[in-house]
Amino acid sequence: MKTTFLLQLFIHRSRPIAAFACCLTFLFTSARPVQAQFTGPTNPGTNYYRLYAYDQASSTGFGTDPESPVSGGNALSPWVLLLPPTGLTHLPVSVSPPMGASSCSLNVNFVNNPTGLGLILILNNPNSQPAEVRFDWAGVYNYTGPSINTPAPYSLSCSGSITGGYWEVANGETFYDITTGQNYTSSTASVGGAPYLYSGPPHFSPAGSGPWLGSATSGAFSQNSSVSFSSGPNINLGDGVLVSGYVDVILDPGTVQVQIGAMQPPTLGIGTYSNSPVVFYPSNPGTNYTLQMTSNLGTGPWAAVTNGVPFTAVQVTNAPNPAFFRLQ
Image (cartoon, rainbow, N blue to C red; front, side, top):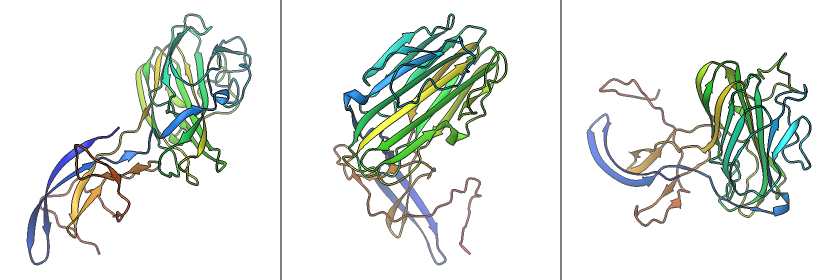
């Protein structure tokens, strides 16, 4: 998503001998995350998505994986495979898991979209027992953008309501660069995944506590998280990348919606230093932005700024008026 600003800035500077004011007008775009620069999926025989439900028929436990996200074969007991493996395309579907009156809807598009941005999964559970669904996918894509050392972060939003008990969501994704053999991973553990809440009758403990988000609550809830990938050697133009991911949702009586979205770029500011423009924006860990510039807002073209000089800046939110600063 590109956000464009027409910014007119009046700058006042204090100097020991004289003070001056200047008027500066610039056209520029917001910093953009390196997003949606994959084509595919390619290799039809290796691409799939699956949707599972836990049928509560066994005590092996909520929160256990039906199988490895990138493995083949059928779902393992006690899981029921609701959507069999198929190609990665646009997927709107509503299904009824084998858990009483529970229902689940799913909408996602994987075309040129390996991380599943725009995915919406809704689980409705009117039963007295928890319900669980898990969606996972894998596909091979070609990278078509400039070299990056980490895939762009994404947002994971969870909202809904519950009459009592727990809700929990786990998510993880892996980029495997086929060319270099390097893995780049993301997980809800990176945003402070909560301990697994389902333990003891009538719930069962999984094999480990897992990177779950969630809480014990009653009524409406909402949680938004930024999920980042690990970094490594560059992913370069033309590299083949195998991407796999999963979303797992467990819910006591209630409704939950889980959505994967693109991170919004930060708002840009502008100033001058030595009569040259200085563009500034917050720098957050795990983000990978490209600053672009153009001399024509209507027609472009936009080009990456490659000769910029990094600056150190501090935002002072409670400064008096007037305020004077110095380094010592």
